[in-house]
Image (tube, rainbow, N blue to C red; front, side, top):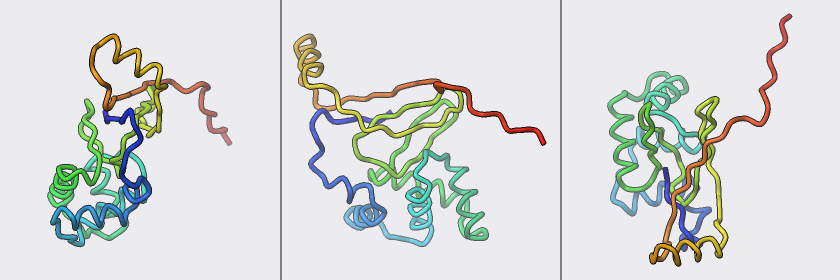
Length: 159
């Protein structure tokens, strides 16, 4: 799960969500932009999905003809997550990584397990009511929604 702020973030969202912004954040954190690190970042920004380390390893090597080792993928993912460059979700099936680190929420499809990023703003009166009832100022919130498809996906036609 991720945290969403009750107030609009002060950072430039477009920069934070861009690959170029990720590269700049790596440089600001003192991280060297190795070929392997760039491959991981480029794949996450290209796919724009929540992927396991194994998925990332397989996709990069399918594109690049075996140019990155599994250990290198894991090490780069851990480093990028540690410095807040990428998102890491802890799931029962393992960790999933995504390009997005700004405040957002998730919708998890109960049929497929697919995770969609959502930008949700809670109404001010709801936040005020929660603050009144709890005696705590809401500075951020975590929202994870689980849902089922509204309709069955179409079945493939048999020839």
